[in-house]
Amino acid sequence: MWLHILKKDLKLHWPYVAVVMALKVAATWTILQLGMFSWQPQLGVLHAFIDLAFAGAAGLAIIVVVHSDPVVSNNDDWLIRPIRRSDLALDKLGFAALVTLMPTFVFDLGVGLMHGLDVLPAMGAATYTALVTFIGVGLPALAVGTITASWHQAAGIVFAIVLTWTVGILTINYQTADLDNWPFQLALKAILVFAAALVLGLQYGRRNTATSRGVFAVAAICALAVTFTPRTTGYQIQRVIDDGKVAAAGPIRLSFDDQSKAKVIGKALQYMVPVIYVPLKVVVDPDRIVTINYVDLSIVSGDGKPLYRGAVSLVPRYLRNQVSNVLGDTFDSASNGHKSNYQAVNLPPDVYAKFKDTPGRLSLTYQLSSYAPAGVIKAPLPLGARQKVAGFGVCETRLNPSDDRFVELYCFPATDSSNCISATVLDLAGASIGAPQTRCSTTFKQWGLNTKALTDPGQLVVTLPAANGAGTRPLTLTSYKVASHFTQTVILPQVRLMDLTAAARS
Image (cartoon, rainbow, N blue to C red; front, top):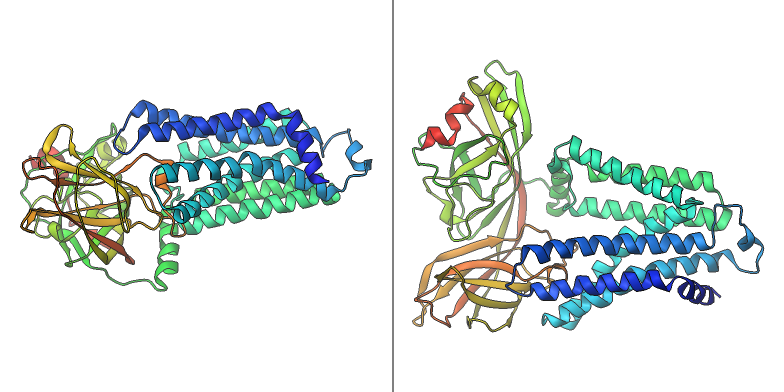
């Protein structure tokens, strides 16, 4: 019976379905146009807007279909028709899956196959992205539709949630939202699934609208609370879950370099706020890569009075340099002994103006992850030819458009590709050309899946030196796996903020 109702809904509301499908086709087209190397900012922004429009159109279509057989209204004819309530609920669930889960799976799978990924890994990644879309868009839209009687009510609920989220983002430090942390992503999805199942059961089983609205409100509050959980808390939870225990130390030693006289050559992006530069001594164990996840900053006066507490904006490093003189987010053994490892710290203007001349103790707490070697692969390096590289995905190389002394390796990542790698170019005799180059992805894999090949253009993996712009060279790639999560704190002696500015170090 529910299939007959679904056919009726599709006949009545096919324009909405057509719009949803058209938007998904457009999103797929933009990804394919971006390709392996091409990075067109306008096209990237367009893709983001199309993805947002797809989610909005799918949610709108679901609410329209639910309202066509309204649960909350004076039009109760569906209650006395010879239709089982379970069939009506299955119809609405089926329609939600049809406009969210099905197009996401089909088109994302198509993108993966067009990029050259193997069928089974691409299916796994496409299934994951489809389920995420269904849980994040389809189920909330179903719940909103079943607890509202009109468009005014549905729009009001959506507007209230979006407004609350926006106010939260603007009110608190944006870095406190921990959406990349898998325990909290799992918690968000569990809240959405449980709340949607409860609301649908109450409405289609008992038509208990008051209780259903209460459940929805509690779920919305819980979801927002999870979204704004401090990232430090999320990191500590993930640390314990991933490691089974809290590691006391890791393969890196960070300390304040009070003897540094090195000039800050590169300047951090200032984001319209003052920047101070903290010189650090860095010692990393051989064959390990360490990444910075988050950095917390605190400043106290000489008598121990708290002056400021906040988060540090991580500054991307320069891709062509193994170690930037402005500290990046990845360390390896090449960081050891470097004379200009500086942590750039963006401070609010009022904080800097108020305390720049006040001697105080500044501390930086680093939340870190270490990676150990997982495998070594040697592969040819033909320029402009795509090839599958085990553990990395479908890769291609090109000479840097602005400087042919460097070659860039791009990949559509495999679903099980490593987050961190190091790469070395070899000459024809097998000798290394330059030092190994290290790079780590800033996007965490979810449940072992890396879906970037389905949702993003090709990813720059690493930039390597090239010998006279030669077309083909052997390439050695080392993949890494997560070994541990840990925390280290660097405490400075009494210092004035103005003594740590770029001008003071020039």
